[in-house]
View 1 (cartoon, rainbow, N blue to C red):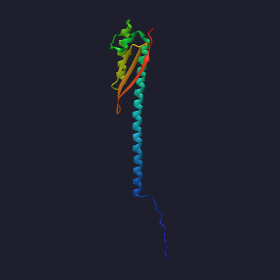
View 2 (cartoon, rainbow, N blue to C red):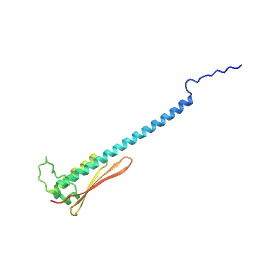
View 3 (cartoon, rainbow, N blue to C red):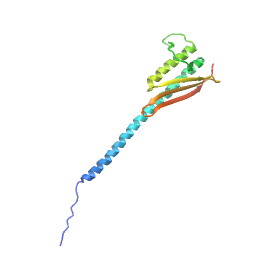
View 4 (cartoon, rainbow, N blue to C red):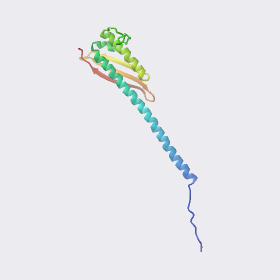
Length: 152
C-alpha cells in the first residue's frame, strides 16, 4: 500500500513577491501623480483668487474716484497721491496714480501679470478691468469683469 504525504507549502515564491511589488509600485506612481496634480490645481486656484481680489481692488478705486472717469483708461503715473504724500491731487491725477499703484500690485502678485482698465463712455460709464498672467503648463490666463459706475 502506498502512503501519500501532503506537504504544505510555507512562505511565498519569488514570482508572487515580484507581482506584489509591481502592483504596489503602480499604486505609488498613481498617488504621486495625483499629488502633483493637486499641487498644480491649488497654485492655479491661488492665482485666480488673487486675480479676483486685484480686479475688485481696482473696481473699488474707481468707485471712490468717480470723477476720474476716462483717466482710468489712460496712462499710469506716480503722482504721489498717497495719503503719506500730503498732496492735493485732482481726480485725473488720482486715477493715474491708482493705475500706477494697481499695476505694481498686479506685477508683484501674479507671474508675468499685466493689468488693464478700459473705459467706455456709456450711460452710466462702463469700466472693463482685466488681469492677465502666465500659468505653468497652461499658458496665459485672463480674468475680466465689467462694472458700471454712475457719475456723481
